[in-house]
Length: 269
Image (cartoon, rainbow, N blue to C red; front, side, top):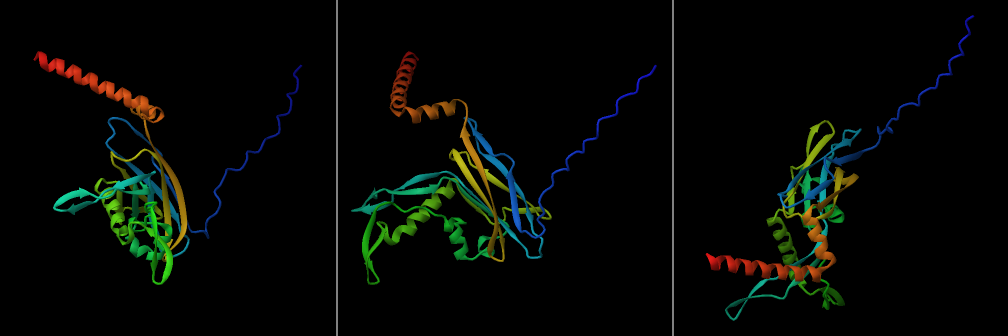
């Protein structure tokens, strides 16, 4: 005698698929990096990273994209050659604190065509508007009838020293400005390349992707990039910073040993 089969379990309805929130009325920019981590070893000769993204622009007002990449800050020490009694001597060193070790801007057009001077200065976009802390030494003067005005000891020469910092960084490809560095590959889709030289400092980098309309910033996307040492280079770097005295003594002993071995080899030959 056949037994009746139990009824099938009730169907469980699948949850609806996730959908993005509508952005029909929102002007914004979204961006990402092809690689958010760069590994530096003895064979590192630089890296090229692609930054890509999309512009959501429901209106007819054209938009510009500006990419700003800042590296870890580090002090910059400068000296100036001065001629004294016919002899060229180094001036008193000037130490700038807080200068980015790497700085790059890429845009769809020249920055001066995208926004005015005041807006770029407020945002710190562009090497001309880069915030570089002046030397800590200060002095008080009287200017335009106002007493106790605090200024840098460099005085009116501050801008010349600041340009020297930027010029030296540009010479080593650590500072770069590309007015055509952002290109649209399709409707609303753009890309830009970040070129890291072999001398790029290690640490955390910050990327800002600005969207401008009619000279005003309307959206920004923030990204991070890590450049780190790997392998034996990282071990030596960390040991040198954790135990600098021991590292220095070992370097002296190693140099003495190599000198002794070299003298013995050349003496026999």
